[in-house]
Length: 586
Image (tube, rainbow, N blue to C red; front, side):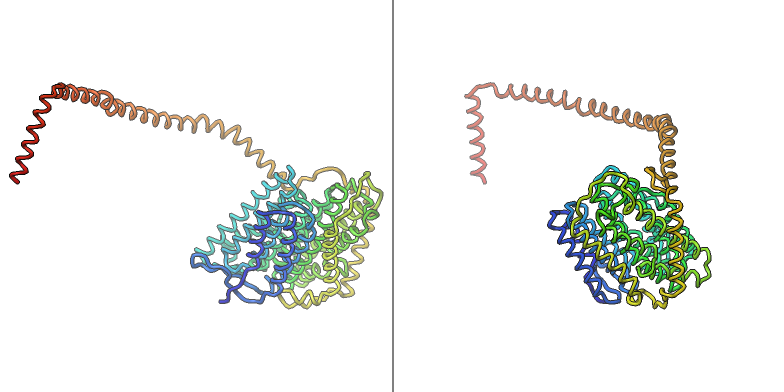
């Protein structure tokens, strides 16, 4: 079996170097490494390769069309994101971003379960560094909550994989359909769905991504949830539970996004919604729907990164992060408005954009497989996406009269360059879908630009725009916080605290504490008795008998040595005479 240099190892080693020895000039090194990894991924050839041996255990990567497709987009968005943050002097951006990107690529290429688990856990750890990159109090609390929920995901994954390797002798990443219904199957599925932000365990995403720095949010939007989508397509194709759940997830995220006032929190809910399309595609299980899930993941990473970059550019230049405080920004910076609407129209699925040629594959496959519920939910979610992002977010930020007297500072060239690249990709994929479809894991014969598809899309979005202007005042952004499923976890934690303080702590003090005190008292009494006996038996003898013996010996010695020098001389002569006699006789 061939040996290969793992592209993730390059990013991990140099990412650690940038993080530990950080200086702003190393931003350029991190960007150069991301370009190198992207070129490395472009040159990967299909096959199974060994990349590391530890204690006679070989670690492998598997390169096929599915893993290559995700490698391309992970390395591409990592490169664009590092270009976007090139001017920022923050230790917690370039190094952790390289590590995060490398972890996602590692998950995609992992063939053995140990490699998959190691990179999966590294995803969670490096994401934490990016969440706290804003260095705010809110980001630290979000980091704690993120770490807790992803620790649960990691534990479920570890237990499931240990069970697979010991009871089923499965040691590689593959489709688990043949063990559907077993304990490890659902444990691993739960771990993946947590990372995919499946409701009700999705609250970590809109809680953490908006609290990161504007640069960290770009990377966070790309890797964790889409690595989970890759895992669903690879391990759980055709799982019936997740097809309906994914369609509901698409609608759920749109509803909450429509209520939001924070632009990055609004975009975070749309990650939940758009990942729902991908989860549904993986659950439908046909080759077309799996292609749809993969294609939409690729397109989503690009246009969602573009939306976070354009929202970040607005926040960078104005210092404001609330829709109700903005307005009229397009007159201040038309380029950012252009970038934003390219991304917004792409996520909505308008013709000539990447979303139109990717999202419609999954919707079409649901219709072909006679899944009316999934089809209807995804269509409604598409309309809701246009309503909340293009109309509500776009109109309230870029048009209308400014709602506050804010100043605008210029945006660095590298931020413009990154947004231009992402915008160009959204358009190129939309107008050249045949080249895009050639990269998909399965042969794709879907034709996006049909008369029916175009007319349906334009008519739905035109009607949605009209409805928005009729209800715009009713749904105007308001300075409020919308509670989600985290409310239940907050209540649960408060109940646990009450349980500990009011019931368990007194019970522990009264019963368990008394029992422990009884045991400690008994132990202390035993130790005291032992020390007393040692004092009397041993130390007493040392303190009394030894001095007495020394005194007696000194008395006896004093009687013999009385100070008479003549007697000492006589004894010496007698001794010498005896010694001389012995010598002569010998």
